[in-house]
Amino acid sequence: MAAIAVVLAAMLALSCGFRRKYENPITKDTSQPDKILFDKAINDIEKGRYDVARLTLQTLISTYDTSEFLAKAKLAIADSWFREGGAAGLANAEAEYKEFILFYPTLEEAPEAQHKVCMIHYKQMEKPDRDPEQALRADEECRQVLVQFPNSKFAPEAQQLLRNIQEVLAEREYRVGDFYHLKGSYPAAASRLKGLTEHYPLYSGADVALWKLADAYTRMGPRFADRAAEAYARIVREYPLSSYADQAKQKLLAMEREVPEADPVALARMKYELANREKPGLMSHFWGIFRRSPSVALAAKSGTPAMSPLQPAIPPSVPAAGATTGTSAEVTVSTVSDSTALDTLPDARQNPPGREAGGPAQKKDNRNSRPQQKK
Image (cartoon, rainbow, N blue to C red):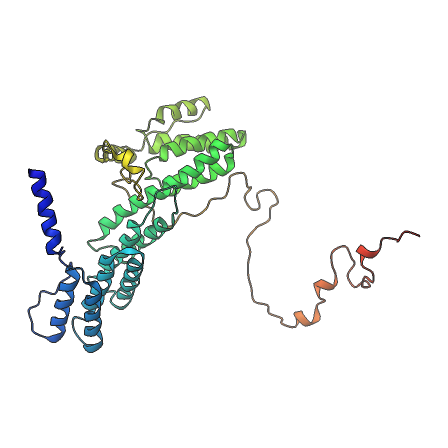
């Protein structure tokens, strides 16, 4: 009976119309016509009449261009698109929020606008094995909250969102590196795993990535032994509670390398993460198959996320510039000081390779120089 009552109550609520309060109302009590228009638009937004609300807000903006409620009206237009949702609605919302930040960067609502741009892409983020475009955009927009508005009330939430996003991006990099490792492409695996472990140290599987990174270096030959030892040492030093820590110590002893001490800050962070990690539900694995969004249950709850995009790393098998020849691979650009050089110097096309400079032009095409057979 209780369940039936809950269902009936929900149906009654839907039949009466769903009303969700607006986040940025104007509490000032006045009878000014622009305030009346704004209140009417907010009432329409709360009742889901987004087209009518936007039309009213556009009337306010065009009619009362010096109104004190002008900024609130522009933000309300963006919020109406955000609430409407859908691909077109979210795209319009992002454009409106960006325009609001451009025109009103010092208002207290500007951090909220940037935070909502971050949420637009965060909600569209897909699993690590799918298109990473939305995750990359979410990473960029959430970083902007911390860069542009580091002291706002939205900064702590944006920081946690960044940890969640970077958990997904790091998992994607790990899967690529693990694939190369399984296929025996160890230079490619080392390149991916090295970039991952250096850029995303808060990744929940960073210790596993370091273990496979060290294995890839080991399989690449003795000249990469120092890099393998450093990867093992990082497991012991930065992930002391990892299940691979003892094995990494044994590897270092077998290689006759020094075993480092565990970093106390890393030890405290790992203890905090283990104590505050979300436990997956009984049906989470089953429903995860049908869910489009990724699981961020293993994402870090502390630590500073990466504040720059991941840059592709150079494979370790590629020698550094100038390592063997003593030359530099740096490319420089400068302005030509003598513009007459183009007129006085001979054209390089007149001296193709294999022919002396200034020699006579070739009169016959080599392709037609084969002697003809006699009949």
